[in-house]
Image (tube, rainbow, N blue to C red; front, top):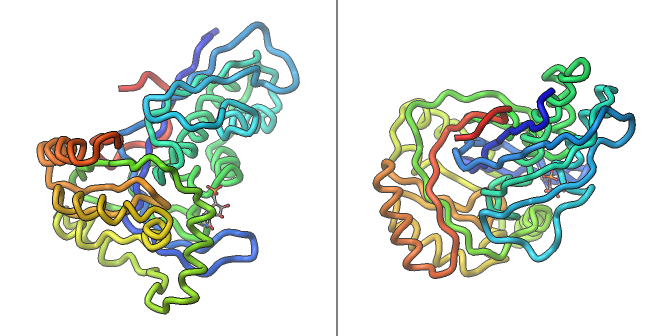
Length: 315
Ligand code: C5P
């Protein structure tokens, strides 16, 4: 029996994020183009003893390769913890108790779906665990559990580049040509996703210019053309307005970042800024420049599209 299962899942940036009306379930309808990047979260399940019925998770520990949040995130509310329990319960298979270890490489509350990537990696790891002692869940069941954990989790499972509608969890793979090279810079103070969405609703009341951008056709054509300049010009994020309003420093970050690369946008609900560059070298130079300009901010390069959640050694 394997005593350790390792899995990983990608961080993401939204190449397009159009936010429609607020729905009665507390969510907003989206037209989102998700793009997975090769900055990946790693989740390990360490098995302890013989199979037992009941809750599977014994404990969890996160190791931070990015800034650590003030609060302790290692508990039963953590999406990775919930993902493991949900898979084991749905499969109805007795498994040994597990300790979850997460290596966190994606910013916390940064708008790159790091928590969702933890959940997605935990889902595939838990399914590999179940497979050792019984029948694993089919893909549709994993997708259903993913959607119940959060709107971004299904995409973290899938990876690549995808159009997301509904809450962002109805996904269709998109064609794209070539690789996109990015710098990500994080001004540290995280943004609460729910807060960003509701601030957008408020801002729209006073500003008719903040209309929902629900047409991603130009971006889709740009992606298939493989022309980075065209992709850069087509990037759009409706949540940029609330992010700028919540973190005014982002205006300067976006300005300097746009000079350093081809185009800079806020990633998801922010505050991470994603800078699209012409190639890997340009991204490295831009990253060095941004790290000098913004002392203390975290900066890394990444490229996409990257694959979704998988079991197996990383890197
Ligand atoms: O699904 P998740 O927990 O990641 O979403 C966090 C919050 O972001 C939701 O509670 C909701 O307030 C907001 N959200 C939204 N519309 C979406 C996705 C997220 O309003 N499509």
